[in-house]
Length: 464
Image (cartoon, rainbow, N blue to C red):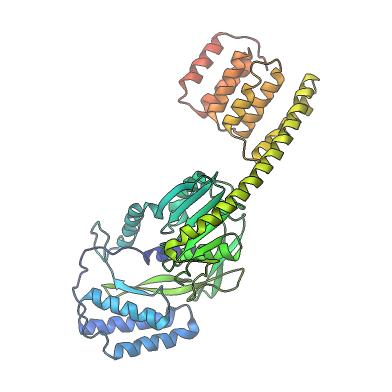
């Protein structure tokens, strides 16, 4: 867990925006420059993920330095930008990044250990945790645009809210065309069954492969069959590519757009002197499905289209998929309701025959079918019970309330509703029990407290 958190943080640092403050020390002098450049080469040789290539890449960079390529660059930012561009060109690795160490917009010192945590927090606030668009763009078709992946502990509330918003969609389009990566993919967990193995991480330092799996703690059941479309483009990078690659290799989504940028490595961050820092790829993704990754090639779309028009290309596909999905859902729910009606008819007949145990078993079956069909909510229970409030089958009414509270044991509203229903039916003892339960769940309920006081003052038959 600790290793995963550190890796996520370092990956995120690779994408942090630059501050405006001038770092201490001004421009890099010739002597400083030579020391800095050798340090960069040494880090690459010792740390770069492809150990068999690291020495040659470091030597190629040393040759570039020896040519005097950076001698005329006196400004730190110009110097860093030129070195960074050459490192990418030499290694072919788009994760390589050499830059000036700078503070956040708050202005803490650029050498402070606070600079990265503060910049990270500030960036998250500016970017709305990466979520830039969430809507039902057409009836039944949902759209989520995510421009950066934040760590799950920071993104989980917003991710759950977004997935809840899209819960009734018959097809979902996820736009990662402008997603530059971040702290790791968490979206797969909302669309693949738990547990499903995703691309893991091989690290050179440990010479180990750390497995990655979908999460169980996402707050809702994953939607494993809703049609899913992912929009990609040349700016889709790193963690966003991992999401697209895993979903494609698992045949769980259709990718529409252009090939992605091609960065399947993960980085560590190294200080280089007092003024610079270097992101170096120290790990690489390994897919459990393909055995490889997307480094250099990018993730290739299933439906090629210009990135700018990928949404327009995806919409007709989503409409057709949504229509088919809705028909299948309607059939499934109709079958569930037919089964629920049969359980209800059986329960009513058994209660009239005073066969309470068998009747409650039939209600259990009804509630299970309702939950499986996605129909069971507190409101469903309330409306269902209401149908029996004016009838003569009190046993059915009380059994429905009991099953509802068993299904939603933490619902103070349902407990209070059940209490009032029992009170109005003359079941004072049961009403008192439910009011006490409601007050236990919600100590601020003045209504429950007053009704308990009233019922305690007017003892009557239990009615249980």
